[in-house]
Image 1: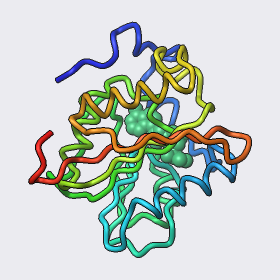
Image 2 (image 1 turned 120 degrees about the horizontal axis):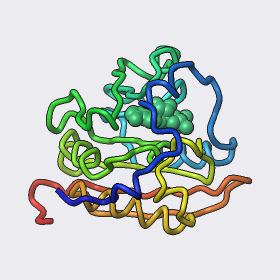
Image 3 (image 1 turned 180 degrees about the vertical axis):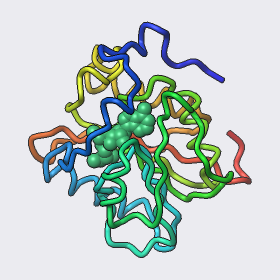
Length: 208
Ligand SMILES: C[S@@+](CC[C@H](N)C(=O)[O-])C[C@H]1O[C@@H](n2cnc3c(N)ncnc32)[C@H](O)[C@@H]1O
């Protein structure tokens, strides 16, 4: 397993367990409307009807298009937020900095979405390897981010990086998980910059 972040890189100003910080629900959005519309359009482009979707590090909104997916599973840290998310068929609460595994079978999903949250991962290598494991061959991971963050909870490597360096970091996270980078997008649809890095698990007949 490739180590992507050093101990210094993964430092947080608030090093209490994450469940402390996320104990109270926040029914807010973490980017402007133009960012969210762009993200929904990207999901619409990449996801197909009937897909099984994991909204990793999620909240009360998934930003998904109205496509009829087979199953949308949420994951996050705050139960009340996830329970209020009417796009989810089911959800799990798990701190990925404390337990870097996901309680799903191999190949259980066609898409893993991780919106506005990747900056909080202290161990992205093992977590992205889990994303790869739970994806079916040919499945996508869509990691989106902007310039907003909870500064006390984002890792040092993210806080110290420019937006382009953050996209480089996400590319390294994908590579560490064994997921080739399929696309990288940097736009400014509104006030908040829109960045997305897309990884795709090779189809079973492709070599990595
Ligand atoms: C800024 S919110 C973004 C939520 C949602 N994806 C969205 O687009 O609105 C950050 C989310 O990261 C998740 N998160 C932060 N630290 C986490 C951790 N250690 N383990 C699992 N999820 C975490 C929480 O669920 C939190 O809701």
